[in-house]
Length: 132
Length: 132
Image (tube, rainbow over all chains, first blue to last red):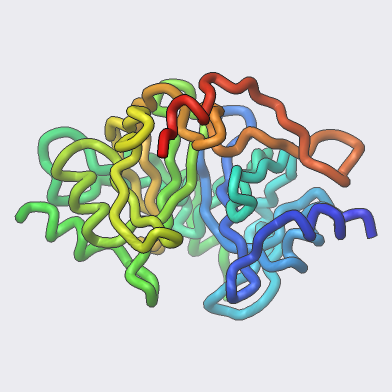
């Protein structure tokens, strides 16, 4: 499997995970941060769609499997220490399960350093998208 | 201390650390990925200069203390789960200790998925900047 040579270059941590930063390829906006195990990275490279490892659910997770908000892989980057990955993707809809384009929809700005303010607009209703 | 209200909103992991994604405020380029403990975050907010926790050296680390390549904090963001931080900074020189603007200077592109290629140009000589 051709991805083995890539997998062997990535330094996974003691839990077998590596941090994945996800950036909108067109705008440069950082839309998400998640974790990958070897299987998630391998599936991502094979399918061209972002897969992660859910630490809370303890399982492989295809981003968009429930919401339809898939992330198409455009470019993968690795950092100087081989222990962090940066993915540039085409993000369908919003990345955030709370209905925002980016999970980083709250910012600390200017003088008041005591609380985070929501700086983005919701682009979908999570109650409609994530049905149980 | 006013930063306590911010610190209390961040979910540090079992090691007392939180992932920090660092983005060039002007270009949107992701230049670095590092870890922070409470002290590093507090020092960052107090001084306006990025501080991290070095897991290998097990100590607080002011980015640029040796190289002069400081990162001035422009904006801090937090993700939906409160367990990842995104910083937009003004990066002096290069962020990478290998001489590049960004630590993510290698990419996997196009058809050949077997190796990472260097896609950026060195902007300083690390041997001159990091003296022992």
